[in-house]
Image 1 (cartoon, rainbow, N blue to C red):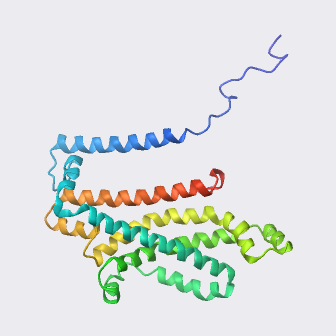
Image 2 (image 1 turned 120 degrees about the vertical axis):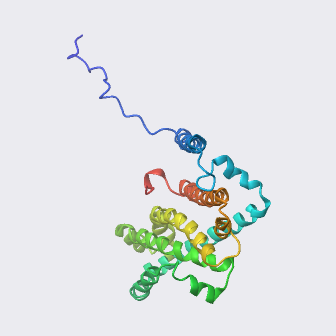
Length: 271
């Protein structure tokens, strides 16, 4: 039998493309890159003998955790409360307002432009007014975090609710489905990819909002601690505070990814 008599043997070009790597392999690569970056950081500081007040080694940064004067646990808890509290508040109110806007076109026409204008106000510039109106504390910082998280969640949720196929809406209405059934079975599942897209953006803004709030009006928290230790050139403690703040942001982002994996199939996710 010749090659022309039957199917030609598979070649490298005709072989099916391999799928993506397993999840554990991707996470292993991510962890390995971070570990390598930390080791390179430690080596560079020691090799070039960089002063700790300029760039401390990771070992010196970790050593600051043993200093009880910094009250790491208490300050991290305060910042975490501001980050997660403002984020959850922005998520709930953002979705509720999106539902109201999609339901009422008049409300969308009247109130949405005002929200856009208010969102353009620099949050740092609002610092003096925040102090005058709400004084110092966790509450004002939660409000600042909320103000940053609210708008991206609102925008993406409105877009997701408006992306529902008209044929599906007409079908539910023809079957005399209620407004709640229309939302529960058609609009909500279709809008979830957009909602989670806004939630991912809001995770970054939540951390930034909490730290900005602590810079402006706070007596506790990692942002407040950064200002205090910076005055004494305690750079290792500043780095430790930055790492803890970053850790809170990563934790919040991973929680969003976990929820997205639970509620949305991989093909429907917005990358």
